[in-house]
Length: 208
Image (cartoon, rainbow, N blue to C red):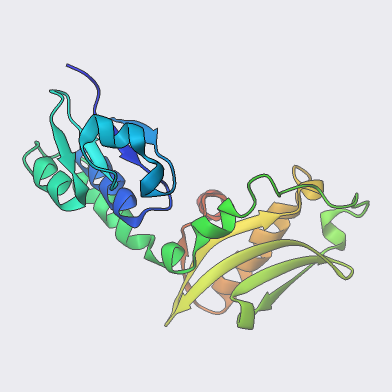
């Protein structure tokens, strides 16, 4: 028996859907990255007979090509105790997907470098809601040093991700940003959906 192996790419929505199904079923797997263009996937074609992703090779070496075929295979596996809870969390994170939180985070890869040093303390910063940009901004003077992005729907505010200038990390600027954003949302009577792990940790530490 060999490990489940998924040939996939992170940007591929079909691959993402299969990864979610694997999570819900509770199956560990090995992710194998493929070339971005199908025409360049010679090795994948030789191994699986296709250059279209995703492709899942199960423990017996059987090949399941495409999301629909993989789903049919996974539906035959035993349910996991946490399957319903993972689906619930997937649904809750819809706001983060609609806000392209993942895309914004990926954009920081290899590009997230500290700005100039910030001599001021977090107490000198100002936090302001910028509804046209769907985010709270943390500024020191004219300099933007952090954001807490959100999606607002009716009386619920979903915090999707936070970013703080690397020059300010570990100094309390992120906590100042999240504290003021959460306090403002609570003053407005909004239900907070903390999809960002930083906001979630703050809300757990500071319940109403």
